[in-house]
Length: 212
Image (tube, helix red, strand yellow):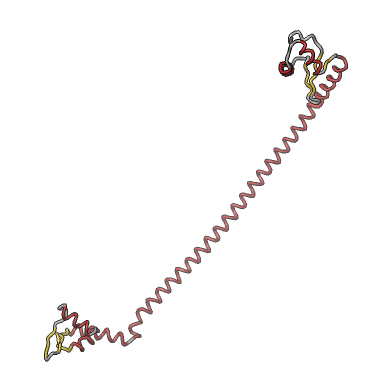
């Protein structure tokens, strides 16, 4: 059911400004008539009742804010629950991280200890082998040195200068002479003996017919 009211009353009922009422009249959203130069608007009773209830809610802030307050409480409760869950998760992850770090450190220490033990064993084995080698080869070195000394005393030999002079007489160049000495030492020619201890080359006298 509709009733006829002034534009001012329609503005109050609908919660609009006068400009808003005239705008809706112009757009055909509200029915109106003009009497004696004034504009009157038809208002549906259902719309009027709804607008009245909304105005009552605005006037009663306690009634109007009850639902938002309850909603905010739920939001805050959910937020607190989420924060508590995050705290527990962080605490668990921190514990797991610390445990993993401790495990890795223990493993690293064990690995280093194993490597160090292996190195110590290798050093010990090397020193033992070196001692055995020296013990086994020392008599042989002494024997060789003794033979060299005896040979020096019992056999005639020439020094390098004398050998060079001899070979030059037979038209050998110094380069050829050096090559001859090196080849004969390597081949084990008994006339050319290299003493590792004194780093000397002993050349026993010969006719050297095979070299000239």
